[in-house]
Image (cartoon, rainbow, N blue to C red; front, side, top):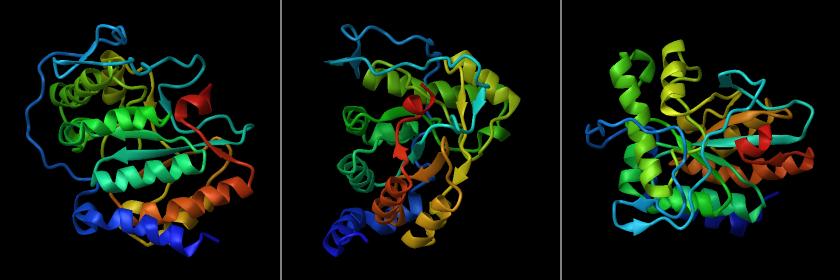
Length: 268
């Protein structure tokens, strides 16, 4: 059981802007500007990178890497090891995101955050907050619109638009790319992601359905009923239910002998 004071504290942290977070946790609401330039696949040097053209980046974040033998779209990791990857769509109220990261770190867990580019525009400090906590940081498109319905030019702009923001904030385009509003990438999106520098598209095999706001107990049950060794779980920042569910979820993993690790660690 989760101590009552701990659960209350988490609910309070998530409740700073619950109404707005529930309404906007996975929707886009920023400008339509997209940088015209493509993003190179390699990570720039840690010493020379700059944020916003003015502040030096202390250390370049990890860049995407190719995992030989794995497909272009990855749904899960090895089934013979007890690691699982909790992956979060990065958007919504920053207080909720911070509460989730703090709870994961308190339990010794590491997660993967796929950030929306416009969310990084609004909350640029969160990019480093995620990395400094030992978590993976990746790309979830610029505006979080339905990338599967876009033509080639617009879809590529969504990928490189977010990649450009990640690179300017961290010195890297991020370790992973996940397409927006779909579990699986089309062949076109996989090809465009590779052109932008992402050898693999990150999917998932367990959907928490937390974006439907079913309550913390339902979120925990949805994950624990389906999770296996190597699973990649889809979760979201911006939802109070997810914050409230995380302690019970991490406790359930621990009881099963599983560890919550970054996607990079899961596959390494």
